[in-house]
Image (cartoon, rainbow, N blue to C red; front, side, top):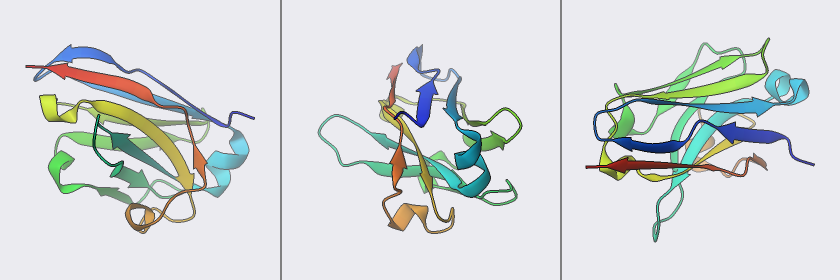
Length: 123
């Protein structure tokens, strides 16, 4: 059963913007903190951003602070990752995830994952 579906990835140039979307069930959006992770070829998966259940707390990896913004629309059952000023090093498969707490998502493995969407940034 697919519970998280990402979309919005693509091929862009350095400096461009993209907005990723993650469609989730109402149950998941109501009960879980949400996050984004990414995995580049040959590298381990890394935490990117997380947002708590009511949207009033967000957390980011250092390299995307000021460029990326995570948000959620619980009425639309969707989580977003707005990515601005993209760099070639942002190239990765981006995954949406649902977990217990946004504050600790970077240290734990969330139990629910999407299938991922490819983001490629050319220089």
